[in-house]
Length: 232
Ligand code: CA
Image (cartoon, rainbow, N blue to C red):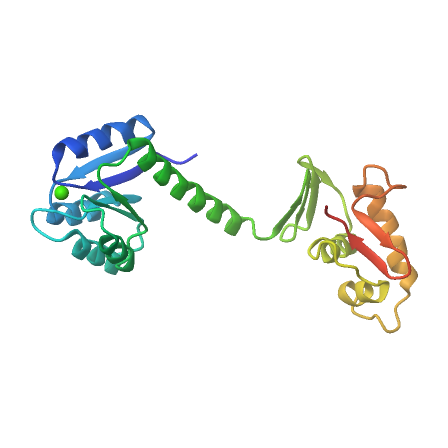
């Protein structure tokens, strides 16, 4: 996993700041406190936090101004706190680049839930980006980059063309392809290719990837039309 996520809280009310810091630190965050806007901006450069909690009422500057200033520098997520609880504040904060907004008094567990949810979304996004070339169907994975198919982590050896036939179908799940379309996509010569080639490849693929090749669940025949990769 990753190191503890760093949270910077910019808040002049020390009692609140300390309670939040202690609570977040107990929940696997590493929290620092800045008591003024200036200190907050300095600490931001120094600590490179992953998340900022920013109070709207600070002694030296307006929190919304600070939010704009942070936004000019980078995309770090900002949750703003306000004691006023007005819709205007909320609209202003979100309009000036804050990602989230809470009204004081707030519950610590809700604050934590929102921060956790942010990082869950973020982690999922990163994972999806990294795995954009991998298709998953239950315990079966098809990795386009590596030309690799695995079931429960065990590689199923496929020839390059077997892989391509499977990939064409699996990357368009539940879409029916005629034999001619498969020939065209994989071999590029639908017009004079032998459609029996496709039949042979489908049979071989079923023997390799289906649990019961005589009753295929993934590579289904659509009678009179062709084949599809079946996903419920
Ligand atoms: Ca304040």
